[in-house]
Figure 1 (cartoon, rainbow, N blue to C red):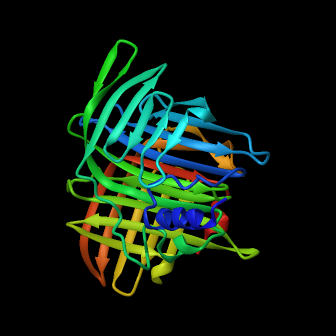
Figure 2: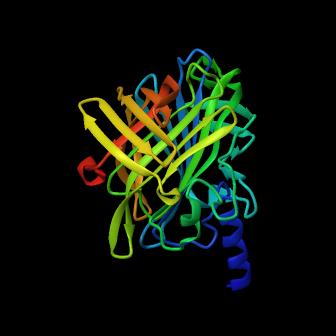
Amino acid sequence: MDMRRKWSYTWRGIRNPAMYHGQYQQRRYFEGWYYKLVDPAGERPLAVIPGMAFDEAGESHAFIQVMDGAAHQAAYHRFDAAEFEASDREFRVRIGSNRFGPEGLQLDLPDLQGEIRLSGLQPWPWRPWAPGIMGWYAYVPFMQCYHGVVSLTHRLDGELRRGGAAWSYTGGKGYLEKDWGRSFPSSWVWMQSNHFEEPALSLTASVAKIPWLGSSFTGFIAGLWWKGQLYRFTTYTGARLTQLGVEGQDVRLTFRDLRYRLEIEAQQAPGAELRSPVQGLMQGRVNESLQARIGIRLYEGSRLLLSGTGLHAGLEVAGSVEELQP
């Protein structure tokens, strides 16, 4: 193996979280991209998740998960590993006759076909010391799971076909993120919406148990995109998680830093079971909704800057949330 080529590839991946990182992985590894698609009427929210998985023995396969948020159903399409191709310089992926990239996706599945184009992508801002949503943790080589936000919000165009029905997504909104590594955390809360009263508003937030040097800590990342500015509340920026509560279907989070406070009240909704990675194997299970609601309030000191309710929200609560308490 050419080590210079490997290190060059690794460095490109750090600088470009969206691209495929698994070129030199052979076991206990997964990688997947998450396309959230919501039509203008909000009647057909979908999540499409292409990816690759390697188990402990090095056996591998490609996959495409599709979740129908309205029908509360999910399907897992498995492909031979030889049907997976990815660029080593940018986000370009092919799985069989299905194609994925930042410009959109083309699907040719037994139960879903069509093309969706993306435009006006808003990536998480890039900085040399924080090349993506993970901040300086992106440079740490032993993380259990890495995370990237390809676009906080963007426009959709095109249609998908299922059976004899055609679903138009032209004028709809999308969201695009990805994960890669060995496993998802033992417990986490994740939520996202870009369907607020203000059209340019988008929220993504997650709290998770992060293994670290033989121990663990509660890590969190929240990003609120509003009027061309990203309000960050993250572990690596020195912000604090001051509240995490799950009671019945209600989820409450509060983040604060020296200047701002972000309060979140979300309501879970019926969802579907998706597969999640455990040591590379897609054998875990997590319930996700695409019809949750997220209420937000942003304060500067005691002054309320923003309040609103996000619809068609993605929401996951997994594992024991008690171990996530601040």
